[in-house]
Structures are given as C-alpha cells and as structure tokens.
Length: 483
Ligand code: BES
Ligand code: MN
Ligand code: ZN
Image (tube, rainbow, N blue to C red; front, side):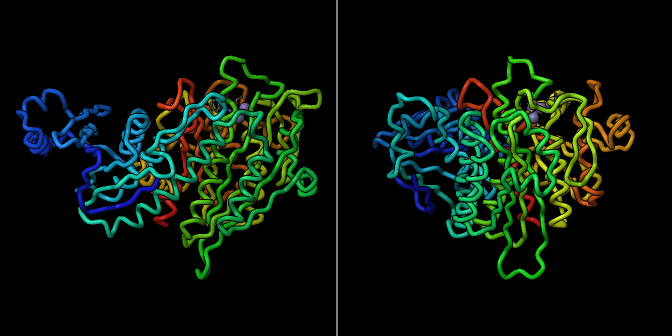
C-alpha cells in the first residue's frame, strides 16, 4: 500500500472523519444535499460519537464513510480511531481510498497515517489457513490523504511512515511467543537494523558478558538454555559537533516464568511480552537513525529469559553486578531490575549520557496503581519530568509521575548484601523498584525510569488476549525531536 497526499478531491471511496463540534451540522447539511435527503435523516443516524461509522452511497456510485471522532480527539484518539476503522473494514474496502483531512493539522495527519498502517496489522502470524489479505493493504493499494494544501505535510507523512514501519516490527517481536524469540532474536534484529540504517551495533555473547563482569545479567540467565545477549546500539548524527547523548536502556526478558519464585500459571503466557522496554529502545534508535535526528542515541538492551532449572538462581542467593555492588535476590521474579542494574551501570560508565532513560515492563504494582492507561514515570529531575509529560500528552502515550523519596530505600536494605531486590511487602512495589534502579545510575542528574508494565501490552481490536501496543516509540520520538 502507498499513502500519498493530494489537494484535489477524488471520485474514490472516501472516509470523512467528523468531530462533534459546531461545524458538524454544517458538514452534515452539505452531505445531505449531495445525497438529496433531508438533513434530519442524516442527523438521526450520525452523531459523531467515537467508534461511530456510517456508510453512504451516492447516486454517482461513490461511497462515503463517515467516522465519528468525538469532541476533542488527541493524536492517540486519531491513531486508535482510524486504526479501528481500517481494521474493522479492511476486508470490504476497495483498493483505492481517500481520507478527507482538509482543515486538520500535522499532529492529526501523523495519527491518521499511523492508524491506517496499524489497521493492516494481523495477529494471526502463526495460523496456517489464512485467507488472502485485503487488496487495500496489498502492493497496489492506494490511500490518498486529501489536504487543504499538501506541501507542508510531506515531512509529516515521511516521519509517520518511518515510525509506523518500525513500530510494526516491534509489535511483531512483542507478540512473538517465547519459542520464536530468544535474546539472539533481539540481537539479530538490532544488527540487521544497524546495517540497514547506518548505525553501530555491538552484541556481547555469553563469554563477552562474563568477561565484562555483567554478573547481574548472568545471574538471571542461569536457569535458561538460551545464552544471554547484551545489545549496544549507537546512532551518531553526521555533521553535528558535540551532539547531546541520550542513553536508553530497555528490559529485554524474552520470557518471564518468575524463576524459582515461579509465577502462577493463569496469565503466565502473557510474559512473552516482558521485552516491551527492549522493543521501545530498539525501535527508537532505529527511527532516530532513519530520521537522522541531530542527537546521539545510545541504546542498551540486556536480554535473557527468566526460567526455572536446577542451576537457576535461588531466592536468598547473593549475586554481583557490573558496578561491583552485591544484590541479595529475595525474589527471583523481580528479575527486571537485576538485568537493568547492569544495563544502567554499563551505560553510565561507558557512554556518559547527558540524559539517561530506562524503560521496562517492571512491576505489577504500576498496573495496580495506574491501570493500563499510563506508564509510571520516576525521576528527580523536574524539567525532564515536565518535558516527557508534555510529549506524552501530545502523543497520548501517557505517563504519570510517582515519587522517588529516599524513605522508600529502607525497603531494599539487605542484611547481607549491598541491597536486596524486593522488600517482601506488597506495598509501593513500583517505587521501590525505581529506588533499586537509582542505585545503579550513580546519581545521574538526568535519569528517568518509565515502568511500562501496564501500557506495553493491552487490550486492542486485534484479538481477545492482550497484545502489543508498541508503547514508547512515539513518546520518545516526540521528546527527542524537541530536544
Ligand atoms: N515482568 C514482571 C512485571 C509485569 C507484571 C509486567 C505484569 C507485565 C504485567 C516482573 O518481572 C515481575 O514479575 N515483577 C514482580 C516483582 C515482585 C516479585 C517484587 C511483580 O510486580 O509482581
Ligand atoms: Mn518477573
Ligand atoms: Zn519480568
């Protein structure tokens, strides 16, 4: 499918998104006169509510779909609303389609492009008896975005396409089951992406991880038959003198059984998604390289499974870390913070980033706190909190700040080691996890932790089980572009 821009209406089937504003009556009146019907008829059948669609058939054979967008949709509402429309209707849509976006701004165009691309997504990757895909999403599919003037939007389209393509791949990785993705799968993805888009990728294998002293990562890997990988990606802009360095660290647990502190089986299958932080980091570095951002972006992904085995780390074991600090493993299911300890430690020691951000599907506690609608944001840097909150509000990939007060560190003091990985109490779990990570940032003044456990995997139109949302790439790209 290709998406192009035009300032001229076409006779093709047209999707007309409509807001519930004062101009709705005016627009419906114009349509009613085109259809030669009384406006009341149309008004009775179409209110402009979110998720509302109405197909109209013109005497000349043209078809028009009205799509309700509600009162004041943000970019995410555009993305989700348009994605749902395309997903629900793609089987019936013709090969060429026009979307009437006259009068809307660039944020809307970006949301719509992502929605159109997203609507083509298919979860049924592993079904053997698949019907042929819809023509609109085939090689000859054509979507024309009808704009008031097309010039300025060319960049927006290119940018949205770059994000959509990468996000699609990340969503595939997230949805892939544990037997189809190992740390090596993530590493291979990064290597290939680096070759394609011209940035450096270094992958440490198990021997190199041992040689570097990444003991925390190794401790989580002990129960797994698959070797760990430590992925380092580095995009440096050309022709920019002394660019700022942004360091991104993502949790890459390809499957989390909980280890010896094993999880209950009911929802354990969802733990194939425990690499949502890694996906956000891999994806953001790739998009930054594609769009040639004037910032240096370093991505680090420590990756392993968390499995149960005779040689797995036991509760009570004391393990080392890259920074030399010792960790008492109270609960082997609190493994994300353990591997991030090495990711963060390696990042601060080797790359001295100006800003350091980690993303992780870290705690059930953040879901208990914020549900599935916002990621927990933890930082001691007010300016960064404000910047990221603004980017989150703009993209609709929401964040909400939670505290990092020092009193919470009491809960991770260990009797026998430098710190322990779990308080043992069902209280403030997302915050104590953040306090744990803070120890491995070496007091970095511009560190942010995003707990995306509730936002990376969620309910979507794609299936009955929770599945990948692609959370983080749009948020980080929005923030990076404004640096
Ligand atoms: N990967 C989980 C967190 C998670 C839970 C992500 C639900 C997505 C959905 C993490 O490794 C974990 O198991 N956390 C434990 C920590 C606890 C043992 C201190 C949790 O939150 O229960
Ligand atoms: Mn766990
Ligand atoms: Zn986990």
